[in-house]
Amino acid sequence: MNQEQSILTSSDKQSEKIKSDHRVRLNASIDVIRYLLKEGMPFRGHDETVTSTRRGHFLDLLKWYADRKEDVKNVVLEKAPKNNTMTSPDIQKDIVNSCAEETAKAIIEDLNGDFFGILVDESKDVSHKEQMALVLRYVNKDGELIERFLGLVHVKDTTAHAL
Image (cartoon, rainbow, N blue to C red; front, side, top):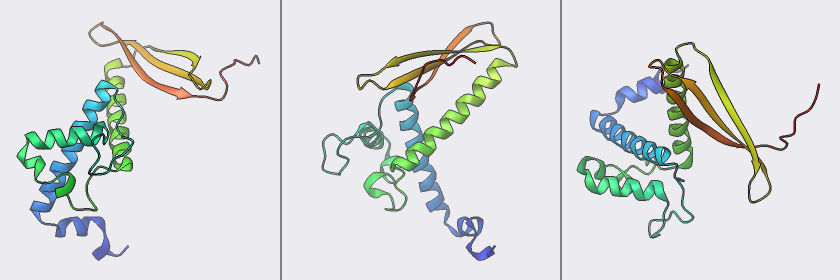
């Protein structure tokens, strides 16, 4: 590996201002995504152009957030470097996946090695596609019953097959 082209060498060469701005952009995106996940809201809009009045929840909330925090306003959206806006669907998916991993770690720690159950319910959506809802149910360290919605999965077939 060429040491001059490594990520670590490249990162070391960046100024503290660039690193700080990147950290602010990343934290702002994470804050917005955490809120949207908590509320179960979709991220993307139909028309995400700059002139659109309905750009989607992620961009609208990020703009709202930036309007209230001067340090964020100076480094996000139009003020961000074009190759580092932190608004692409791929970046959003990476952040969501990181949140999912951290949530799973927290649940596993909360289980403390005890038993848990996964509840599965299947139904058809409006387009007649089979889907399964998954819910995790367990008793935490404090003896409280916890139920967490894990997700909705579209499947080809939900019929059980006898062995």
